[in-house]
Length: 250
Image 1 (cartoon, rainbow, N blue to C red):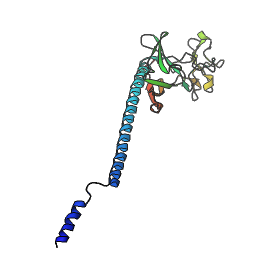
Image 2: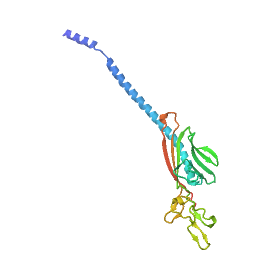
Image 3: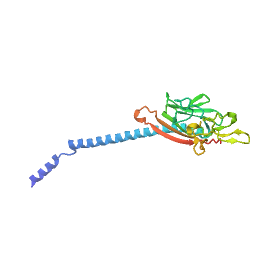
Image 4: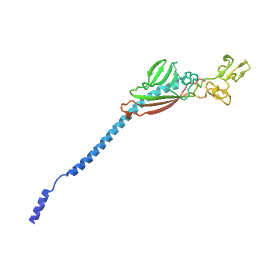
């Protein structure tokens, strides 16, 4: 009996205590993996927050540009007389998208908006004096497109009479109405299709050139990206807005 008791006491004293080397290595591996995962999640969160901040900053800059242009589009008068179509200098008018837009504001000043291709900044020209609407340190404007409808001045009426010898009409002897009381020919120019009208709008029912029955509408499309130093933060974004002109001249 005594021998058995001594063996038990000896066995208890010699039993190893603590963790084995394998257990320590397993725990360290688990903590290392968790640490790497947590750090990666933290870095991704910081990158995402930085990209959101840069995007918001760029959007704020672009919104200020849009507000400046749309303000003039609402209250100013569209300038259709400029030759927008550079491919054909004999064909004034607006067709497809344009790289610039022009107005006459309420003070009679000539305003123009366009993109400086060298600096990637939106520029405003007031009576020949240029100023920038966007700052390339905050946003890089990659493209600025203007779509104007209708394509010709909707307030121009192609009238004809003896005083102008029907020179307003593209077709010869196309004045459509006779004024028997005065003996003068007055009225609109006659036409068979849109090509016969300077404003490119032939009423096929009446066969006369009539003005467009709509207010000018401007659609602006801006493509931009952040001016961040890292390429992964430079993601091009497009925004679009449309505004109707409030000037009424009929």
